[in-house]
Image (cartoon, rainbow, N blue to C red):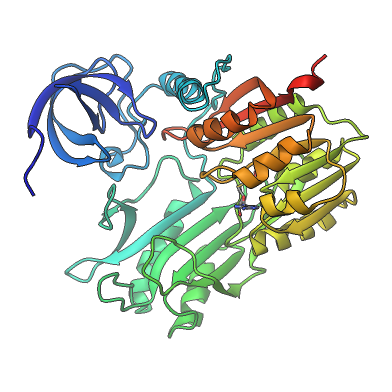
Amino acid sequence: MKRDFERFIKGTCIDVSHEGKGVVKSNGEIIFCDGLFIGETADIEILYRRAGVLFGKVKKLYNLSNKRIQPKCKICSSCGGCQYQQLKYEEQLVIKTKRVKEALERIGHIKTNVNPCLGMEDPYYYRNKIQMPYGKDRKGNVFYGFYRQNTHEIIPVKECVIEDKRASSILWDIKELVKKHNIPVYNEDSRQGILRYVLVRTSYHFDELMIVLVVAKLNFPGQRNFIDALVKLHPEITTIVANENSRSTNVILGNKEKVLYGKGVIKDSILGCTFEISASSFYQVNPIQVEVLYQKALDLIDISNNEIVLDAYSGVGTIGMIASKNAKEVISVEINESSHRNAKENAKRNNIKNIEFYLDDAGKFIQNYNGKIDVVIMDPPRKGSDHKFLSAVMSRKIKKVIYISCDPETLARDLKELSQMYDVTYVQPVDMFPMTAHVETIGLLCLKDSKK
Ligand code: SAH
């Protein structure tokens, strides 16, 4: 196909896209470029056009932004996981706050104050969930790492600076044991082999650690000896689960599971409540900032003991259970079966009696539910909520809504719909994902005519 763009341009970065790429304008075109920050001028090679926008890479940098720092990780510019590791942390927070404000204005047509993003004291080694693909090179050496951005090529890595430090030596030793015990590493092209990914989940508040082996077949030769050797080497591992995934998709976990060692779950706690988490349950990845996030959300919504709260998109029931201490009753809705199961167990474990759990689509549930709801806490996945859910919230004239979102653009889209009947009265970004372009946001909404 004929190229419809100049291959090389020189330009200056004027903004940062929501994916964390530098934005350059040249000859009426917009170019997105990795690793280029505001004020920097560069020679750029244009690689391709997607949805009308050009994507390029830096060939030569003429000046460095004074917001840059030396990144801790050597592969941060090729792995694509950490878009902002080369920026001072204060600057990362400024960019995130701006992203939320701009998304609300541009997509949601909402002009409101956005509070400065709440950051971490130490923004490294925070992630409690680590997943790595394993591969084999031409010489037969086993390795693991991250996918190079937009590819399935694995870049070997020994330590990742945003992941819990306990994971790296385990991942390394698994590589050694895989060799020793002749466990075949999966090949994505030939679809042969066994081990695809290793997932490590760490508990922040308890000495518990889960390993999930994502394998093409649940039962594979040498399994017992491999597991025995692994737990002998790493007694900090409290459970090991095999998860079968033989499909060729980007989704890491499959549906079939077998517990190979321990209980198949680990526990962790948030603001004094303890939660059991299984291999496939959703659980917030930053155990320190999740407390900041939830505390802020609960302070803002200020639940009283005569109010009934709907916790929609509830995961393993975390925020609903914490909210139940101040509420009359909490109704929790979640679509994922294993999260729903964990949530019910979690309520028992915490001796919480004023909470009910429903396994359902949040939109379908709220449309069919006949009981009273005073307050909604909603925390949908990245794609946001839907018309079914939002229109039901509006037709019920629920007084207060807290929307927790991990994607400012879908948040803005949904708030635009809700702003027919709600005022957005408080917006607070929280940095759950330092070094990356991701940002979590809390939005408080109050029913328009309920305002005093
Ligand atoms: N509030 C939880 C979970 C948030 S993640 C926490 O803070 O930990 C979003 C959750 O929404 C996931 O658990 C996902 O399984 C669930 N979900 C996705 N689509 C849904 C839908 N249509 N209805 C209900 N839950 C859904």
